[in-house]
Amino acid sequence: MASFPLPPAMFTRVATPFGTAPADPETREALALFATHVADRAVLLTDPDGVILFCNDGTELLFGREPQLLIGCDIAGLMTDDARQARIDRERAIKAATVRFETRCLHIAGGAFDADVTITPIPGADGRLRAFGYSIVDIGDRKAAERRLAESEAHMRSVLATVPDAMVVIDDRGRIRSFSAAAERLFSYREAEVVGSNVDMLMPPDHRARHDAYITRYVRTGEQRIIGAGRIVVARRKDGSEFPVELSVGEANSGNGRIFTGFIRDLSDKQRAERRVRELQDELIHVGRLSAMGTMASTLAHELNQPLTAIAAYLEAARRLTGEAAADRARALEAMDAAGREAVRAGEIVRRLRSFVARGENERRVEPLVPLIEDASRLALTGARESGVRAFHRFDPAADHVFADRVQVQQVLVNLIRNAVEAMGDAEVADLTITTRREGEMIRISVIDTGAGLPSGQIPRLFEAFATTKADGLGLGLSISRTIVEAHGGRIWAEVGAVSGSMFHFTLPAARSDSAS
Image 1 (cartoon, rainbow, N blue to C red):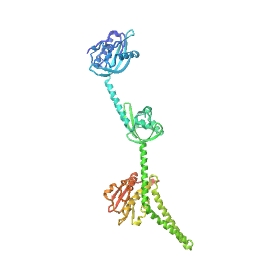
Image 2 (image 1 turned 135 degrees about the horizontal axis):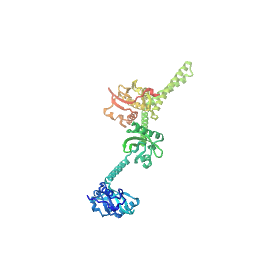
Image 3 (image 1 turned 45 degrees about the vertical axis):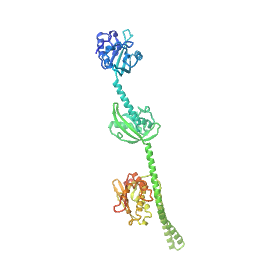
Image 4 (image 1 turned 120 degrees about the horizontal axis):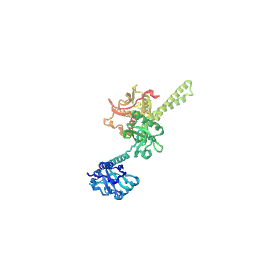
């Protein structure tokens, strides 16, 4: 590989691409040798018009051309830029003392490569421009890496732009470093507005003071409370409105320290939907109570007629006896007392019916189980005893209190009891048994009858809406019962009776009696 000494006339003491060249010949020779053998870049000298005067061995590595073949050529021929642009670059170098830029250079084998070019004007001893020094470095690998990184970042941004969850990246000081497109939509901030700011700007005021302390404690102790686990928190939009979100936080270590990535999902629509579902469930339950009321209307009319007839008879007898002797007046008072008791009885029947039908709120509290079952039994068995139904209770002393909505659980019991009564309409033995049993943290309540029983093939579909074994039934009673029980955290199921009839069971959460206070 040929090498060429730097032209001696160029150096009395002048600037070069490597600094200021000394005037003595030995040092100039050493500098020329150094420039010749720099292998990681091309070093060239041109006259003021761009004609090549010198080039080092690195030139051949970059351009594939022997140095001696380039002497006397225009340096613009090594670049994709034309001679006019090369002249403009040299003029820029004169004005700025040096200029550096990126361009494309040409290899003799064909094709272009990315290059970093530095041009330095070199004056002579009289201060007039004598030459230009060029330093050219192949940056193809670096540019390719930059392009891959840019493509990767663009791909990542395109992915993040389509992710429905908002993503916010912060450093260990709580400053926002990245803000996804979904986060922009969710919080109504542009990324440029929030990057560099503390993430507490996305929180309600009462949460802000605690957030930095959380990060400091975690960095100091390593104790994870949110990292790796989701939780429900409150966030704040640009307009100041607050809304519920589900927050999941991940952690990573970057070259600049620890970073935390928060994935944020807006729960506003979800919570609205859940509230609507609860409203619809309450509506359905209320409709179920109204339906049950309709089926009991005729029986209740008969049941109420008895105490009201008795009241009228007692009052008529009292009227007749008020004018008689003292003994008769005493009998009149007894009759009026009996009339009062019958009036109270009629009122109690109406009260239970109104309580059952009333919409009310879904209020769960600790309830004593035995009175709850007894009230539901009295309501559901109205008129049943005249049909020969015998009712039995077996209560587990350990199953004394449940955590439940009293009216809704009574609706389940009334539905199961009345179904049992109807199932025993033609049975020779019509025994109804209601039992309770403690099973860990739950209490099982069972309604057992001696009726015709259930076909085994129908049991899996019993609790589906509109599935019924009755000729005139709508099939909503058991479906509503399942909705109520499952909303309480329990389950409901049916079995064929051990001897005859059927058994319906459901569970409710047990509660301690002392928690009622």
